[in-house]
Length: 172
Image 1 (cartoon, rainbow, N blue to C red):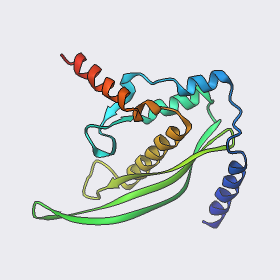
Image 2 (cartoon, helix red, strand yellow; image 1 turned 180 degrees about the vertical axis):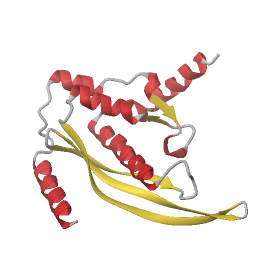
Image 3 (cartoon, one colour; image 1 turned 30 degrees about the vertical axis):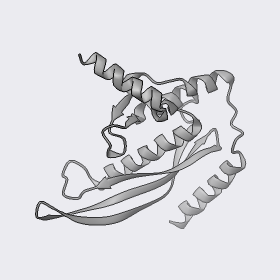
Image 4 (tube, one colour; image 1 turned 45 degrees about the vertical axis):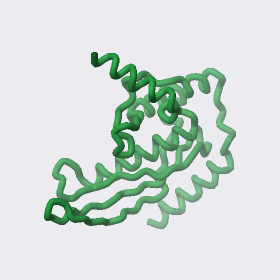
């Protein structure tokens, strides 16, 4: 318990001291900021059908191929949950929104931090609490990468509109 808290605090302080000082070559910067292919995106970001999200595997692959395996880390700093319940079709639905606060480190330097969340429904046999924690970490990774400039096209309105158009044209 406390040893983990102390270790994360020490790591965080060292990483903050190195913030903005990541040794990156021009080639690495260019490759990190390169657009992802259309197949890397899915609809339904934040549960909204009209928003896109970048699949986490593409982000991890990009970081591994450009920065290097073992040269970056997503460090969970805290995790908590908020229980909820509501009525639906005459029955009570219970769940927990799981939150994970994490920071992205590259070569020991602080890059960004974000909170990810995912909803866990105990009545859903297809998932468990661990899946919700993993999903929340993944969402935090997407948000941290955005701050680092990786995958920014997902937040650019014109690019997203083009994605939808290309997708619609391909289905004709």
